[in-house]
Image (cartoon, rainbow, N blue to C red; front, side, top):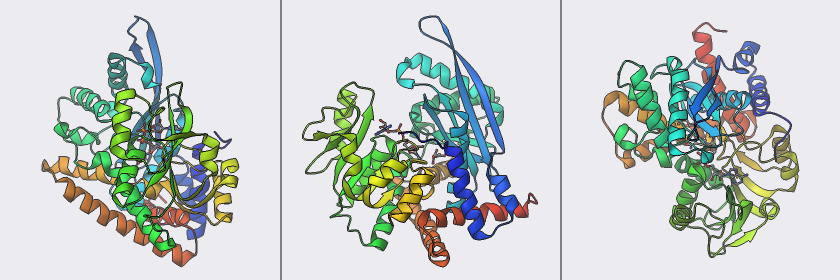
Length: 423
Ligand SMILES: NC(=O)C1=CN([C@@H]2O[C@H](COP(=O)(O)OP(=O)(O)OC[C@H]3O[C@@H](n4cnc5c(N)ncnc54)[C@H](O)[C@@H]3O)[C@@H](O)[C@H]2O)C=CC1
Ligand SMILES: O=C(O)CCC(=O)C(=O)O
């Protein structure tokens, strides 16, 4: 389903449109169109069979006008420098719109982690940090989990980093850590929880009743699974689930359940069978059928460039909530606009993850930890502040949510760059 435009070009087009609409000094776009620092490393790993394999790793720090770079690290075979640059750009915008003191960062390794043993994965994770530690730090650049990385990988990262950093326990250098190593309650759930805050608000604005809505969800990883859980808590039913995993029976397909999917049963089934293919009480449908179903709400929560021109033309949907980063290509976005499909853009819809990462970093500085209720209450308040600000701008400039969110974020970054004398 990949498109011709790379994600960095998509990000640049979106930023340019927002800068123009705000009538900003052209220097703002010149600064924001490329990251300030991009590092590429080679990571040697002794494989279990005795051979040596070299993996490519990347880290991009997009813009530090508002603070240290912040963003996840992805382990995926398709990771490349352009993707990492784009993802770091979107991270600057997320921090900008949430008013948290960070710039954007993102990293990754081109690898299929499912093909590695646990020892190889640990060696690769430690090698990534050995290649990059001089450019990381609580006040420099702060990684976190993303696709195919998790608390366990953060534990390897932090352990290697502390060793190389003169045994200084700067645990705030990484977020998304396990609780015992200074993680925050609510971080695992944060992206899905935040996605539902934005969805509830917008559904209310455009008159969709969550309890009656027909909802399609793509993916069942961190973001998608917690989105499903919190939608269920709102009384919403998710009947359509597009999945993909490595098992031969599954490949890329979709499931339909008349009574709606339940978070606990899906997790339990996947833990036991390592795949969702064959999940009982659900009918297998084709991926094409999934993408042409009439939905009130569609949530792509897997990877970028999923909603292409071709898919957009066939979509019969009222609201798209971008759980993933960059799931819609710019050409497809034009079509969605023409079809008056509302879109809650990635930089808003999935910004709950970095918001709670920020809370984790704050808790690490204080050495004092909050309850999950504290975290989620604060998350809801901070996200609603951003959502309301974005809606205000949307009304003022008579534009859509994506553009208003970009404008809202860029205004803050531009102001910081100007005060620092960069532009
Ligand atoms: N984890 C987090 O806190 C945040 C993640 N994101 C973004 O959300 C997206 C998903 O990330 P995670 O849930 O963390 O990753 P994950 O690795 O936990 O899950 C990704 C899921 O997508 C599925 N998938 C991949 N391609 C698919 C396809 N073509 N059709 C259906 N399913 C497919 C995989 O099987 C897996 O279940 C990424 O774009 C990531 O950058 C954004 C903000 C925060
Ligand atoms: O929690 C973080 O710092 C990063 C989250 C992330 O990578 C993202 O929002 O795409």
